[in-house]
Picture 1 (cartoon, rainbow, N blue to C red):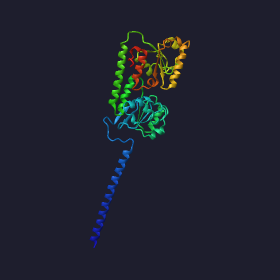
Picture 2 (picture 1 turned 120 degrees about the vertical axis):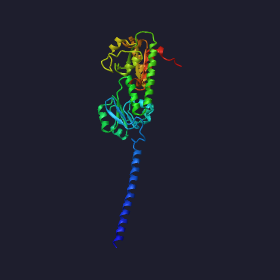
Picture 3 (picture 1 turned 180 degrees about the horizontal axis):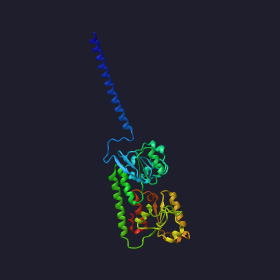
Picture 4 (picture 1 turned 30 degrees about the vertical axis):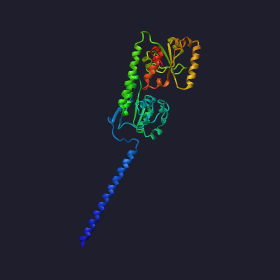
Length: 337
């Protein structure tokens, strides 16, 4: 009588084992589907690893980061980097930038994260960026705060035209777009070399002395080590603020009178208010006893340069150099059609 009991017990055990196996199988499938759904919904998810990634990179602050894949959700803390990302054809990857990011016009429509010096960290975290890019102007405290949020970040320090070329290729590489970056740099170099050849065709003689005013009043200028200074040199001019003690000096009127510039460059915004104010100030300078004796004023040699070209060291640097060069040397300017 015990044999049937043992057989029934064995069947029961076998049935339980089979049932547990089925339950485990269903649980495994459910977990796999859930994991796949979460991965697909994640803003950091990538479909496939791109060539060259994972990418190891050391930024201008000496920080090392490793990007597993080309970033798709970027927060830009610098107008120059915002402009460059758009120039690379990756503007759609920017999820936020600063209130100072105004070029190209599409950048204005982006979500604003705050200023260059004081970005909103809570807002940034809520956007789930996979890369934050900043410049040498980004405060170290902001750098530390972003690090504490465990967000990939890279910083670029623009110190010269050559550094802009380097940073262009580096940022393009971070985005998985190195060839596009190299093409932008090649085009910029070509324009710079063409401008240099034009200047070499001029008759020998002293360079025109240049006074750069970051605004028409106040005598705020740009000295040695600044981008405007380098652009003036490239354009065949002699910057009278080159001997100033600081990179962004406020010149004394005596310095202007002593150097007697041949041309005055003025950075100007795009608004009508800026244009009207500049016109009034220039007319005032023309009748001012001190200014009227300056050669640039007496000869009406005023050259206007869009302020964003002078202050944003990005892919339009050569455009700024050409405007300055043709203002200093009108005989080189292309004929207007």
